[in-house]
Length: 278
Image 1 (cartoon, rainbow, N blue to C red):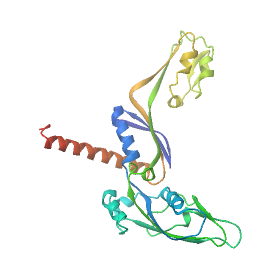
Image 2 (image 1 turned 135 degrees about the vertical axis):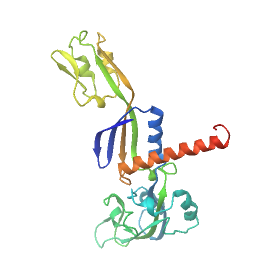
Image 3 (image 1 turned 30 degrees about the vertical axis):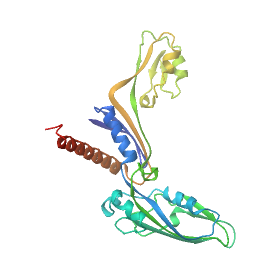
Image 4 (image 1 turned 180 degrees about the horizontal axis):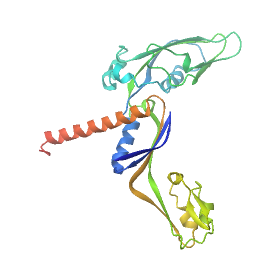
């Protein structure tokens, strides 16, 4: 297998993946979405809430705050060991990170309460962004609560998914027959991604933009002489991920790979125990 980084930012990653089957790549993508655990607020105890926002509304917004989770793997128990504990209203420190908040409305005007106002018990588990608005308060209103975050998986709730987008696509292959091409420019005008250009009276693929092709094949349809053909490269794919910030791209991919390997090992052991494999 061969990997090439096409684009990398703190919160996104685009990879060119070669020499791997589509179902294997799709398994990794699905595991990233639903199996790689992150920290998220799951239980909220309201002590006082005189705002106009219902407890459920505030709790929902708290749960959707991305929390930094890279170090949490080594500090907190896995989700399977902590779900039932939380349901019994017990919050041991090896399962849950605690957040406190006590805010009042100002004497004049409106106060917007942000994610950065949460007071975390664990400095390693804090909001990724401090400027997420939670609710507003005016004079005489007060909110006080305790919130508890634990490790969870995206298959339980999307708030635990480390990514907001995880997609893959085929690598496009655009073939242009220069002898047949008349240089009319219809394919250039039809391309919604501006992939093509005219050079010396012939259609050409622009440098560094081939991977942006969505293979809509509009260029094929408008070419009257059928000089252009769009297909895909076998066993080459583009994997695009957008991260919430809860986990780093490296940590996310490593954990997804480890989970897939463990699942395959468990499957092999099951087959051996059933006598299917020797």
